[in-house]
Image (tube, rainbow, N blue to C red; front, side, top):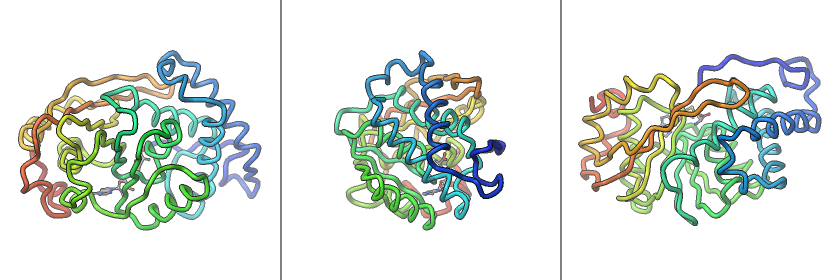
Length: 267
Ligand code: SAH
């Protein structure tokens, strides 16, 4: 996401003094403050102290790896708590996430929202997918280190959307900051089962993208059920969750070959 870099005493990049315990403590204070926002009350039962502690450990791993991997522009403790973790949790507020369901985070990058979802909802079978090998390697190492019940796959949506075991196999597909909606629909809807959901995590100016997605929805078998507008806590800005229900099977000719959906969007 196009966000500015924050500088805190405990952030990396401000000299050599990144201290994981003090970063984790500062992060946890911001997270508790942010989660007090009423928007998160439906999720309160998921966020037990041990879950929040695991989320803090995950964020420390992201911030440390970021010094090598350039996973994110957001590393300050306050911004990471709100713009990464709270933002990631919001996807659980749209669509339907059945107990034990199969979930795919497409273009997971450093693990947002998928790792946070996997930590908050251990009942779900979460798959983290990314086309970038170094990000996948990071995700695999952090999944193992934290013992998270998620699996990691290096691959492109255009290929997985044709693959048995992936095509039309997910109750929920979610994506944040991956592509314009019309392109994203061609990546995500082939992976959703009929009756399943695609949750696109967007900024507040989603209306033009939504209007440009009618044709893609029609071709690929989706219907926008609702758009949930969210105000992030601590005045961190507005977001929108576009909740698409898959109503009909996707025709076998979609997704098209790698690179085609973004070069020739279904608009
Ligand atoms: N969701 C994360 C990362 C966003 S960056 C976050 O919000 O922080 C976008 C990511 O999508 C990149 O890591 C990129 O490698 C991945 N990506 C883009 N197109 C893709 C495709 N067709 N298939 C799989 N991954 C893709």
